[in-house]
Image 1 (cartoon, one colour):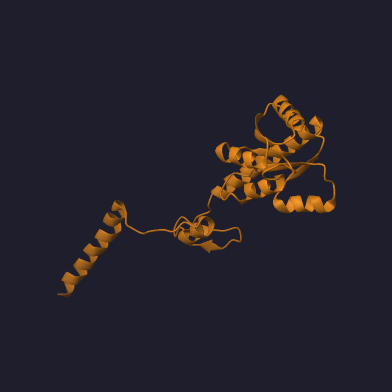
Image 2 (cartoon, rainbow, N blue to C red):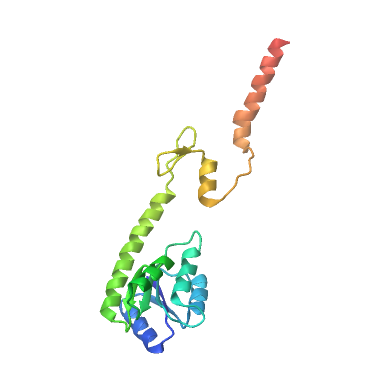
Length: 193
């Protein structure tokens, strides 16, 4: 997996980097939340391991930014923290954090968390793939949603992506439908006269 480590403490950053590399993952590092955000934009990753307290942008603000990105692959977010209070965990969960690791970082705990992340990302990929498959009627081209309601394809796509449609007629349909309807209309008009 590609993993981004955002940690301003050089020793903590090195421990995390060495552990992740020993586990065979590709690693990028950043010294603060703002640098981590810029790195993520340029080089997407599967997992972020971020310290909570950092200069420029803290771990929660960084996580919120990651979660606000529309239409992107899911990034599993692990927060490094010395905070252990229930309210701290709830605040972090509300920001979009997936998992926590206590400080100082322990390599075996990180290994376990990364195995969980890998498993969840695998399942997320399967769900995403299934969502990409649209159940569509072969005749009327309506799309079935999760609640077993059938939508016109244009309405369905607009509701899920915001895309709008412009309409036209392809050459094949013009020949098959429009030209044949005009020809039929002309035959009926000739018969009446």
